[in-house]
Amino acid sequence: MRRSVFDEDHESFRQTLRSFIAAEVVPHYDEWFAAGIVPRELYAKLGELGLFGISVPEEYGGAGLDSHKFTAIQYEETSRAGVSFGGSGVHVLLALPYLLMLGTEEQKKRYLPKFVTGEEMWALAMTEPGTGSDLAGMRSTAKLSEDGTHYVLNGAKTFITGGVHADRVIVCARTSAPREDDRRFGISLFGVDTSSPGYTVGRKLDKLGLRTSDTAELSFVDVKVPVEDLLGEADKGFSYLGSNLPSERWGIAHGAYAQAAAAVRFAQEYVQQRVVFGKPVASFQNTKFELAACKAEVDAAEAVADRALEALDAGELTPAEAASAKLFCTEVAHRVIDRCLQLHGGYGFINEYPIARLYADNRVNRIYGGTSEIMKTIIAKDMGL
Image (tube, rainbow, N blue to C red; front, top):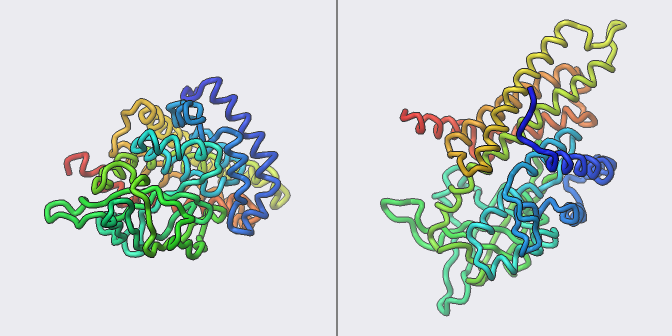
């Protein structure tokens, strides 16, 4: 079936990105994987390539294109090559929407030019050691000073992707106590400068997968945050967080589809080269049937991901539809990657092979951005159940 979601400009971008990955990422990726982090210089190169400014208005140094299709291509091409751009996905997919939606003109002029070039990398800090899906239960606080010039931030965050390299982090904290009838009231968002006294990056967490993505613990002890770095209105942060969830969940869905497609490609190449009992593994009926079944599932995931992408760009993707796309595509990827790893035999368990890294990277898709169980709850509620 012909895929109609991308046009000639998108495909031209794909070829540029594929060439960049081959020249600038693949030759060094094993070294980055062993180190557990990509070099900071990579972000400057991604900025030069224009990846960070695609959706940023032209007056702030970007291309001004209101579309997620270029991001989708990035997911597909990095998965195809078996590599990652570290924590930079958070910079664009998670942090940028808040800057565009909530930033004042002064803030946009101050933040966005450096955002586009990669000179200033951003991350998003919501999760706390004792608070995951229940964000209303967060304990970090930001109290307005008596003279009204700054907030004093105290607390801790964990699982913060991009947290090691970040120059600024959108931190969610309580500025007021929750109301009896509204636990979500009282949360605010701040664009915190990571060089501020009292701001500390703790451990870079040792993860099962996504090893080149710098995921860290953060702590704040009497960090002074200028009132000029409050994003949006005070106490209304929870509603802002909810507004970006459809795009975040589409991103995870499309990324999972791209991983599943890459897994089939890796497995197909491997079984054609690997010889057992004097014959290529690809010649056995079980191999053919397994890959055919995987290909059918990937085709279905592609259709779901593309439909969600079109709806997102049209401003029509609902929270329930995003949850459905995430649930379906991540579960497909889980099944497909597992079966493709099995076809690699013992080599599938060796990190030298991209299928092994893909297997580990994929596992978090059913956890972050809302677990599969949360997705089912959202879908069921939308069904009136």
